[in-house]
Length: 449
Image 1: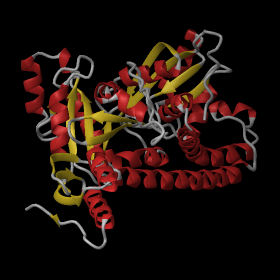
Image 2: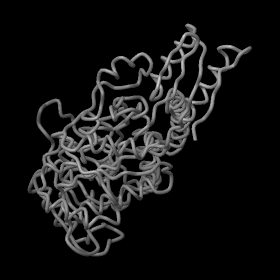
Image 3: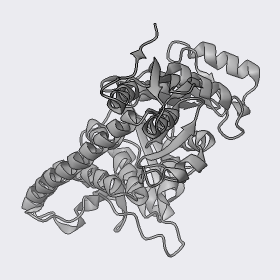
């Protein structure tokens, strides 16, 4: 994986961005944003519409033009908004001025991920993706080395004959560690469900405003009070207008009404990601796949066609493994008129039926989102208990208040009558604890119709 130059000097390395498309017009907006997010200054661009050339990706004449452009701009790197094969990388690099590197779309994404990875899990996932990307390139480096074309490998990096074997060993080690982390996180999810929490995941295209919505919905006081119980709860979530501000997961307790909700923000989706890259971040995506509800966040201020493409990308990512219902959230509606919003809702109704329209920035219609979350979460069970008055019974009543929604609580001289709603797992625990209060005279427990 190409190393981005050191930015501590304060001088951003310069880049030329390029893209080839089979047909139509090449759009360089996203790759320019990605390059900027990685710390590059984009000084020029080049596009081509034609079928892929097996040797140079672009046509050879366009590759020569690209080399002249890099020389003219004295650019440090050429960033190609396509997946470029290892031999193609070598061939393009052989035309560039000495010292200029070739970075394709996925190398750039991995570089950004590497800069943003803060947790051990995120760092492992980035390393795994980089190794999976490098493995086929190690084979090319071996072939080039046999032809004695060693120096720099024209953007491919140096080659060590044992590298391919080392990569496979490292992949195996990292997958084992990530599996262990995933197992721990799955146990934590189940413990939270048993404690009465519903798990809601924020998903969607990168820069859609998920982190801003998390901050808007989060109940900071409750997070602080539960910090010891849930040490992984992060008290902050970034809200910057920048791609990939959130790389790992950030979980906060959310205020949606009567139910206890833990809301998790995850890495944003992005179009045209290869299978190996999505697989490398499977551990992070588990929080989406195994949630009780997924809020699919879309930037409603973008053109309809961009929204459609990003909805398709998000649904494709979620399709095979997601187990939860999905609610589409049109975010940033403060930037739209009522007529514009109505048009977009109608145009995208097949992909986003009955979306919730909100502004995470201003808080407009956030209460509508809270109500929708409550309505879409799995149904709770209703329960009625008669408990003998005792300290243990009062402790149980307090626990029900913390883990469910008490609708009626009445006392007389000898007993307390409790009617409540709670997740099925909580109801089962309440029944078990109530039965243990007095084995000789078990309390009445009747499930309401």
